Amino acid sequence: MCGIVGYIGENQAAPILLDGLSKLEYRGYDSAGVAVYDGEKIQMVKATGRLKVLEELTQDGAVLPGTSGIGHTRWATHGSPSDANAHPHFNKDQSIVVVHNGIIENYVKLKKKMESRGYQFVSETDTEVIAHMLDYYYNGNPLDTIVKIMHRVEGSYALGILFRDHPDEVYAVRKDSPLIVGAGKEGNFIASDVPAVLKYTRDVYFMENEEIVKLTRDSLTFYNIDEEELEKRPTHIDWDINAAEKGGYEHFMLKEMHEQPGAVSDTLNPRLKENDIVIEELGMTDEEIRSIRKIYIVACGSAYHTGVTAKYVYEGMARIPVEVDLASEFRYRNPIFEDNTLVIIVSQSGETADTLAALREAKAKGVRTLGIVNVVGSSIAREADNVMYTWAGPEIAVATTKAYSTQLIAHYLLAMKFGKVRGTLSDAEFQGMLEDLKQIPEQISLLLSHKENVQRFANRYLAAEHVFFIGRGIDYAISMEGSLKLKEISYIHSEAYAAGELKHGTISLIEEGRLVVAVLTQPSLYKKTLSNVQEVKTRGAFVMAVTNAGNTEVEKVADYVIYLPETNHYFTNSLAIIPLQLFGYYVSIGKGLDVDKPRNLAKSVTVE
Image (tube, rainbow, N blue to C red; front, side, top):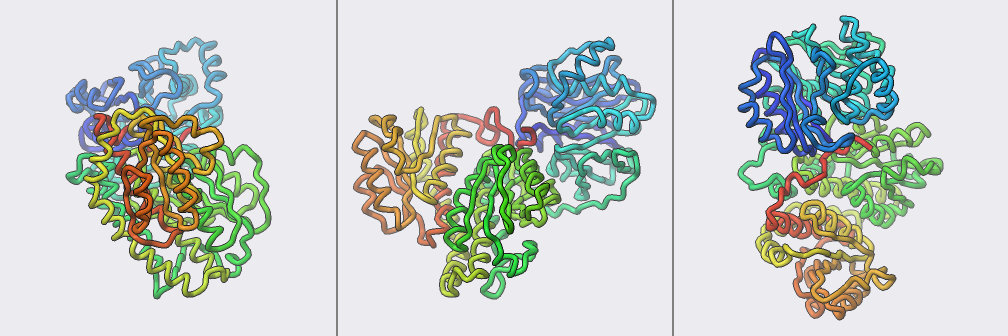
């Protein structure tokens, strides 16, 4: 959530800041601002709304001369979206300016303290407290001043700071909110995420908690909270820069849906070796795998939905009991960990605040942790005992598609590996599943090639106010993600229900013309779900069904049917989700909405 960019170097800073912020729009924001040192003073421009408003106000940065500066896109937490609440924030004489991601938990106490010392506040934000505290404790030494603030502030923060008295330096500090440092030939950068700097450098440093960095035009110096210099090594980013561009597609979401076959292949193929699954980064011996007594899967949002599917997969293939927890609940419920428990932490960004806190909770209790993440060098990747990367590449649209699909693949691979080692999968079952896995990328491509059919159907439901998704078992997990895709980008109320629960109250909401999306991919549950479809159909529902090829009987009760290619029943989520992603996408664009940046949402939820 929010985005920070900072630059100091040989070039004009404002255009670089605006360009970097544009690469972070996917993080979600409602206002933006930049501050640049012009040789005499720090100039600042802020604006509510999209980044293009700020670009127009600054003439794409031309009205803000200077070669050092910081910028920010804000997602409102403390105070409504407004120019006054937008970042950056000044101290009283405008000699210090700061941008901030995160939440200062003790800001009310600190604000009262600053007010008692004569400081006046012009915003409702927690961030302005930091600006005034920097002013109060400033002794001419920026590093010493920042450390004093760190000892007094509680909560999460990534800060970018300019001091007028030190015009050749930019400072940044990080605690529980992501921040990277880029080393370029014509200057140095700070940013919330890698895409902001890819145009200028491929060498980045991932900052750890309570680390501080001082940037000059041609140097980087890292410090810990004791002001001791640190040695850090850069990571070279190999992404194709076009991966963070639309590449001719109308929207990032559409582009990323079409990238799913490649992303799935990239996640799958390196782990398939000589008709076996080899996950070197797992770091577990066969004996350790056999000793697992329980698995917790902890995640948020779509990553949580992959965990709901994975519960059926792990328990079915490896016969290991699995609990799936929302990270925001897990971290507060004091979970009971048995011996030989494995906690699997799933996050696209690797920075999700609740998920990261859940990881730390598990580690504090001595439980083995495995991260499934997409972003190399992210906090979860660094802090988990072991990490399994999904190779989805940068995902810009807020609504996840390819990251979700690659997380599913990671779960399949782990479950099959565990099942083979533990002897709960026969060699024949294992080999059959391998062959089905290899077909998934091509089958996803086939489903995407029929997107116009889904678009025609979606256009009929642009005015829908309520939609229900139903399924049983894995199909219920698919329904949860399909429902989320629709609601988050189309703003249509949508809910997913276990089909067998309809009669326990929910069926009272079914009326003439109500759209019900039914998922029927599990052979053992097909007839039971078919009966549930009949129940809603007889009460006037219009039914869209997603089912396996050959299940033509469903046409008797469904109004529109999408057939899936044949695959193992454990893997059907990877196929069934494709038409549901497309359906949500086409409803959204049919309504004229901003599909890549839905209102009130952020790509990386880095605050609680």
